[in-house]
Every structure is written in C-alpha cells, then in structure tokens.
Image 1 (cartoon, helix red, strand yellow):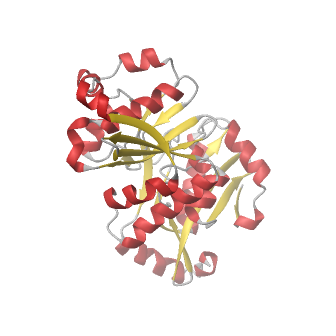
Image 2 (image 1 turned 90 degrees about the vertical axis):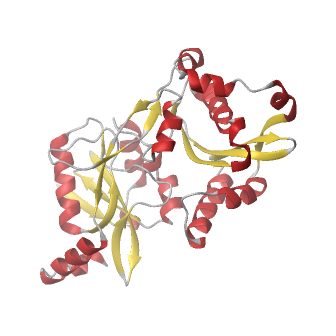
Image 3 (image 1 turned 180 degrees about the vertical axis):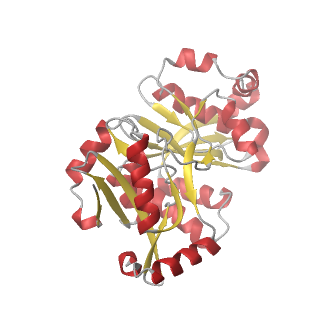
Length: 306
C-alpha cells in the first residue's frame, strides 16, 4: 500500500496536486521549499496512487540516511484529501520500521492512534484586518502606539537580501555554530532569489533596529525569522513589523508564526491573539538512534538506509 520513492522517482505533478488538494496543506511541504531547505535530500512515501503522501527529509552521516527535519521547515507529515488517523498510523509504522529517525515533525492536522509528543505553533486564519487587530491583547495594542518622537524618527522599508544579511548575522539567536548561521543565510538567499521571501525592516534614526523575514505563497505568509537590536527593545519595532504584514495579507492568507515553544516567544506571539495549533513530533535522542542502527543492522535492513 505504501511505496518508498527516491527523489528522482517522484511524480512531482501528482505530488503537488495531492498537496494542494489536501486537508492538511502546508507551504513547507512544497517541492520548492523542501528542495531549498533540504538541498534536495528528501524522499517520498506514497499511499496507493498518490492518494496520500509523506515527504521524508534526511541527512547523510557516514554514508547512511538519517531522517532529520531541515532548518526552517517546521511541519511536514501526511497529506491527503481527507484526514484519516488510520492511514496516518500506517505511514507512522512504515517510517519507524524503515528509517533511522532523529527528528520528524508532522503537521497540525495530522491525528494518530498512537500517542506522540507535541510542540506549539500559532496561526491567524484569514479574516478582515479590523476583526483580527481588534482581538490583539491590550498590551500589544499599547506597544503598537509609538511615541511621537519615535514616529518622527522611524521608517518601515522592504529591503534586499544584501541589505538584510549583516543585520541578521549580528542579531541571530539560537544558532550556536557558524555553520548553522551560514545555513540560515544560505536558505534566505536562495528563497530571496526565487522571489518567495520578504525582508521588512524597522528603521530608527536611519538605522535598522528590527527585521522580520517572511515566506510567501498563494495561501500563507510564514514568519521565518525575527531579528532585533537589543539596545532598542523598548521601541517595539518587531510588533509594528508583524502588524504591518498581518494588515497587508490577512484578508486572503494564513499568518503562520512558525513557533511558540520558548516562554518569551510564546508570550510575544500570544499578544496577537493567534490560535494555538500543536503538531506531533517523532524524535529520538542519539542513544536511541544508535540502538536503532544496531537493530537495523542485525535484521539485515541496513541496505535500505543507503
């Protein structure tokens, strides 16, 4: 019932049709997004004739494939015209039996018969800006009322990747290695070249103090990054930038905050009164990953990982 296809075996026309008609549709499962974030290191699990699909990204270690969600790719999972926990369970079992898994993130619509850990994400569904902004918390509304002096000395501009790069590198958080920072920058540059990314900057006294990075497709605007100069945190430029993007897009597109696990980030996002949309995660620590490698080897299945 389920076939495992290598990248060059995928019928991308059928894959895209399944994805676009699916109840679970996510921009992050598109071929374009996956090709960039995984550097085309992904396979596909297919149920019957593309009735349901499950993209599986991987990294190569010591010549073997290990399932690992790419940078900036928050959710994947199973996509089908109608959500079906029974079919999802078949995919889950196939994944666990045939792959070494470090981390795989499903989408917020996927339901399972098994119990899986969940992570938080927040969305605002399409509606009029007036209705959406009326729901903002009192604190968020206050943050959006800038002082007169700040208004006179500030500006909001769309900028190019080359203009944004230095500010991102100087203010990125959560990336501990130079290699990780280069990875983020490389992905941003590729998406910008594909005209899928927007850099919106808040200038104060002719200097950038806040920057947000958003990915855009026909149905979604996703917040891929928020970068702030700590010296100007009281000005609340990030709130103003996000509100601007919401105002420009929310009537026709979902606004996806792309996260919410860290307490301070969750508090910030909740100020916009989004809907909590948790999603399931399958994750194994390195110790379990090593044990599974041995198990695969003993069962003679190690060939399937290459």
